Amino acid sequence: LPDPSRHGLLFYIMTLGTVHEYRGMGLGSALVEECVRAAEADRRCGAVYLHVITYNEAAIRFYERLGFYRVKEIEDYYTIDGEHHNCYLYARYINGNRGHLSLFRVLADLVNSFWKRIGIFTEESY
Image (cartoon, rainbow, N blue to C red; front, top):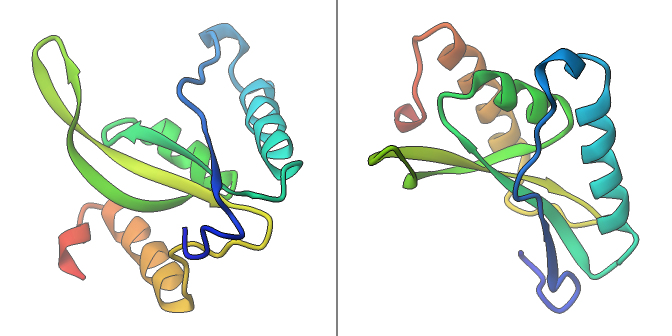
């Protein structure tokens, strides 16, 4: 966080899931928004953050739709059945914290997300 004296706390969402037959009903969004409201209640909290495995496109779209920004990719964060998998660190900045965001970064991330979805552009390209 850019100003730890102002925003010395973070809120971490460790696990969030919805049983398949209840997906698309707004339950996941409601849970995340409730987490954000709880974090915003403490003005010292500057961000809600979480990790998403890189191949979980549905979760990536879900969190981006809820206002989370991809901060960075972390190599070998998860080990599943003996295999290492990368993750993305996502953050939603709150209480006046702008985190790593700049106009350039926001625009670059939007362009990168678009091109990555169609398989042309990767994060290493910029």
